[in-house]
Image (cartoon, rainbow, N blue to C red; front, side, top):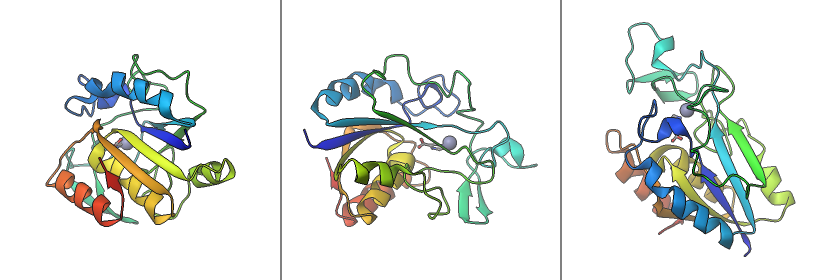
Length: 198
Ligand code: VGL
Ligand code: ZN
């Protein structure tokens, strides 16, 4: 038991009936709970947006969800409104065992910038603080599960590998959005970065 289990965005809005539902998102809850027993530390992330977040298509006149715009920091997918701070959609899936969590890390709370990764916001420079938390606790081996494989899980795992952590992604305990080939690309990029994609 030397690794941290990092559970990405297991929230109602990413589960069936949610605002940005990922197919089968709720199927992985029990498996994730079971996996917590194997970890030295359990960290949960929570996508946590203000109601007028710039990643929402509703904030851009004439734009529809899943269109891509050019933000100041690069391409940004426009999403349906989701994970609004304090809403039911932003809450964790009711079946998720949150009692085991040492840390709940919220991300995406700045209006003008999205944050897929648990380490850096989408400008790939603004830190969330997670790196410092892991380093000061001497947690060097990380296991990722959760939603969505091809966005928040992949971006988090890729940043972790770049930062020098030993990284494992349990794809059986992840589910993806798969937008324009994003799933294939994410798996390929993770493998190329030396991540153990299991
Ligand atoms: C996510 C899109 C927008 C995710 C979060 O958790 O993968 N995807 N916000
Ligand atoms: Zn989001």
